[in-house]
Length: 233
Ligand SMILES: [Mg+2]
Image 1 (tube, protein in one colour):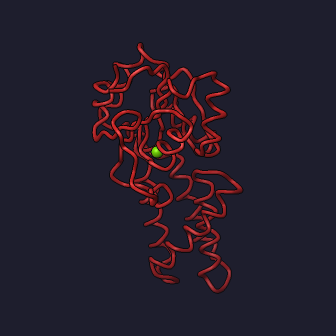
Image 2 (tube, rainbow, N blue to C red):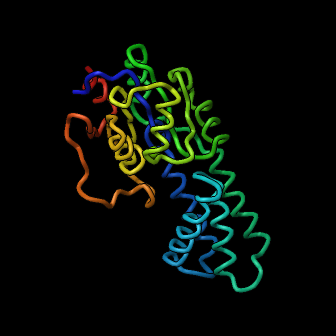
């Protein structure tokens, strides 16, 4: 059971609504677009490496993916990148900004069950404009007391957030689908966390460290968001 919690924070992408399937689809379209120039593995490797560098400059979201696709195209196409390919890449990026908001099963009923009992926060990484727009389109906005679009989800980012909102880490619980971003850093600063895996995870968010800490006291894992309400005491 989760005791003594005042504030519950929810990750957004692949916790509240589906996100990664659209990014996966965008990457498949990109690979098909450049299939005359490079194989799938080469494109995958190059795009990932470029995105990792671009993240430092632009933060998370559609922007580093779009720019990474352009840089990858420039790398694998020996002559100048044809305008038609550049335009298609830009469209793939824009289509991601307009992705349908598909709320994950039982999210709304769970939020409405717990909203009156806890202060709810949405804490997401990514592009500010894009994430705020997705929240507005989701219709979930009114459940949250506060929305934080974080530049990263490292322990210091969470520490700053809690300090600013005057939340005691022990009374804070984060709910999310990324063990490295939503669970581990929160536990490291003394908070609690509920890990809700999603069926597909971006390589960058896949945990590769020591055994995951799921102790059933401060860190929980559930396969269905409805179980969150059962955990809360
Ligand atoms: Mg997520």
